[in-house]
Amino acid sequence: MEEKMVTLIPAKKKTADRKSNLVRVAAYARVSSLPQEESYDSQVKHFTSLISGHPNWKLIHVYGDEGISGLNTKKRDGFKLMIKDGKRRKYDLLLVKSISRMGRNTVDLLNALRELKAAGVSIFFEKENINTGETTGEMLITLLSAFAQSESESISANVRIGLQYKMARGEHSLAYSNFLGYDKGENGKLVINPKQAKTVRFIFDSFLSGMTLIDLTKALEEGGHLTGAGNLHWTKMGIRRILCNEKMCGCALLGKTTVVDVLNKVREENTGQAPKYFVENDHEPIVDMQTYLLAKGELIRRSHKCVEGPSLVPRINDYSGKIRCPLCGRNYNHKRTKSGYRWICNGRINSDCNAPIIKEERLNEATLEALQKLWDSKPVVDLLEVPILKMHEEDNVLEQAAIAYMKNLFAKRVSDFCAGERPTCYDPETTRNLIERISIEKDEITYHFYGVR
Image (cartoon, rainbow, N blue to C red; front, side, top):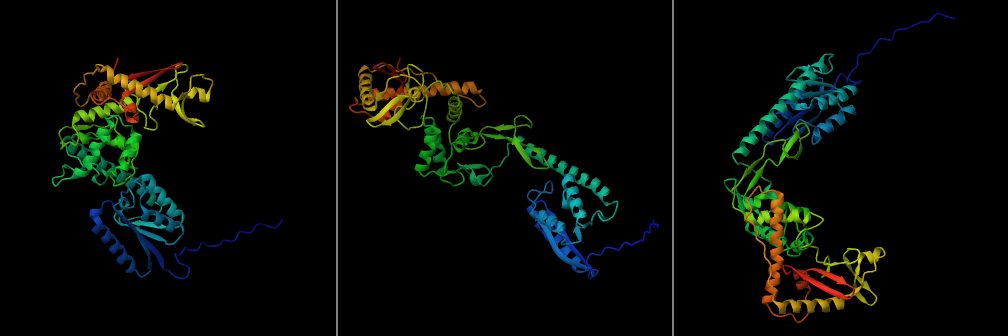
């Protein structure tokens, strides 16, 4: 066996461009707030002049982000393109004014540096005079970027404290562009928008008249009412937000949300993590406080499965939710058959309940007869006392007040009916407004009216 022979092949010094000694150079500039646009422009001009003036450098591109925080890379399109091009080896050297300009998040910054270094790209930070191509560069960058992140977190903490001081003085702002009911006044105060205020009052009045949220969305759209964002499409959630917004009654709750992750700008509902401030008589109200609090209580009342007080259902059919099966306890449903419309127990449709089926014509006749008897008897209608509510009442107090209010609302309709003319024909609206429930016992139909015992 012959003796091994090892021949040394000397390392070749890497050049940026095999055809010449040119170094392809790019730069990155960033400012965190729009008022610093001049600073951004000056960075771009500085790098363009610096690279163009160097005999062995070739300007590839100046990447940049304006008005973007350096705490994360989510919205930094210029930064992302810079990394993408670097990994594709479109440039050899990247110039940055300082470590904090490239990023204040230590983890994101180091990941970016390592990706670029793996692609053969060196980064030079002017302020710190650090080059990642040197062996000691990454260690220094780790320390300095940690300081930059700490500084940013400290600034964020100072901003939060400043906001708390403003909230403690009752100062606040909101997104007027999509807020229904108010405009921004000359002194920064909320000023009522008359046209939008009519929509807000319509929502409160309709809701407290017993209209369901589904029916209310239809009524708003059919009436041409626009949302705060100027759209014609309404949602139940959007209406709920208006009914629950204390600003409608002239107050302001400040600090509803709080930042829980400074680096990623994550906000969540403030359930006690940070102070809140409640400002009464902050601005002119659109609805009075009693109306606002009754609406809030009514939302709580309707949220329960077993609703105390008037049970409200969308206006699909006249008797929806009013006829309860005497055998299985389910509701009767409206069905179309070959011989006409019928009201049938839901248990009979889906299981083995043998509750009687009622023809709609017969039900309408029985309803008219019951309403005529009600008018003839002129019953005494029971009305409950509705307490005057104050802000910060417990939910159960608001709910009980709403129960009393809604019972009185429907009972007064019975009184108004008896004070009017005697009915001579069937009226669907009267059925929905006056009848609380209907009991079926074999061939006998019994009516129960609101407020009448």
